[in-house]
Length: 318
Image (cartoon, rainbow, N blue to C red; front, side):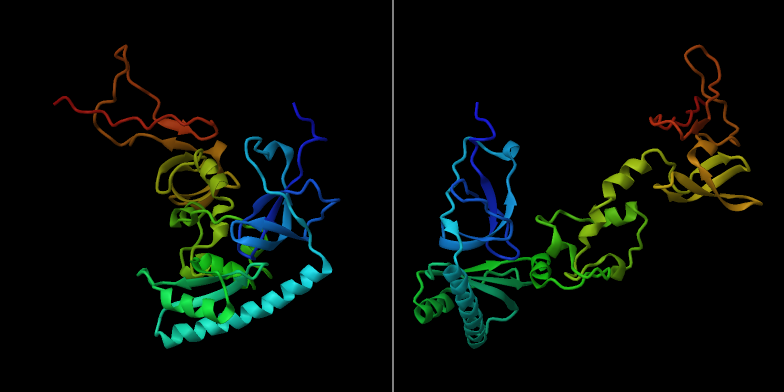
């Protein structure tokens, strides 16, 4: 078995601001540091990317081969990166003009990136148009203009666009969450806002990407777990002031707001209330148990972790 001393040093490298990490073997490097730029060979040719992660030993996949990092970027490499960034801006304007000439509408070019060996060029774009867009003629002109072997157009979603441009979040945070620490966008639904009692006003739940805010998922599971032990809204419960109707819930405080006639809305802890499982005003005979005796359990406490299933209303034999 390998020891920690002879395991390879695997690092995560990111090539664009909104790209994911790709993993390489950095064992031959001497004390690489987060944030440093590395020169590596990829399927797209030689690339210069930023070291963003050291992979822990328990994450290693022994049956997977990682390409080696060629070197830490030198001063000359970084100077070339600056040159390629300027050249990419120029190519972006060139492509925009060609799209305009070809009358391609509804496409927004976000960024352009040259490979480090200057043999390929990649454009990121966004569009609300679901129809296929033929970039064939534009790609030919770009290849001819910049003497390239390969040109790609990659579509990205509105959340990636917001991440790329960074800026202030809809909540007022100086930098958007997606630009700080979100590496993968998870599915967000309106039920997450409902479970947490958040206003469904679009301005309250929509981010700068014009999609549901990612933060709706941060505490969703915590609220779901807390709600399991609580009564539903509009349910009848017994309180120290009498029987009332549940108006609102405070899952994190483990309290409920109950309207009690002649007392108004009061806040109670879960250990202070019992749910009324059956309508005590019913005139139908009570259900019988296996011994032919009346069932008397018509209320339920909420301070127990496990909730019993709701009993069915007794059926009439008449």
